[in-house]
Length: 107
Image (tube, rainbow, N blue to C red):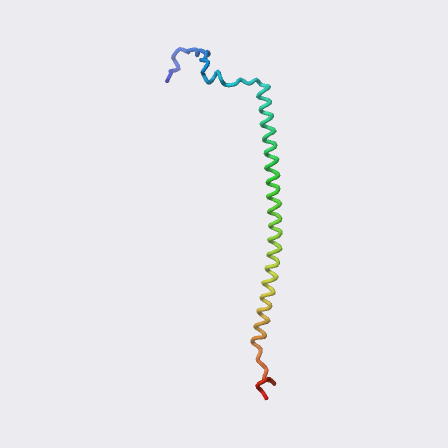
């Protein structure tokens, strides 16, 4: 429905039928609204605390995993160095000329 600005103002009758939804909605006074607001605030604070504890647990776990990773990485570097040195040693010993000496076949 379109009403122009120039039309006369009509008053709306505030009487609603008893089956109208607007008459069924609960009316709350300011004390009840304040109480509901305080309950909602407490719930939000509690939820925030739970989320903070959860976040702290995740941060602690990340730090633990990071520490374990650094230890494993150090062990890996040590093993790589050790294997590299063994490979160098095996190359040196395999390229050394064999000495002809007394053996089973040389009588």
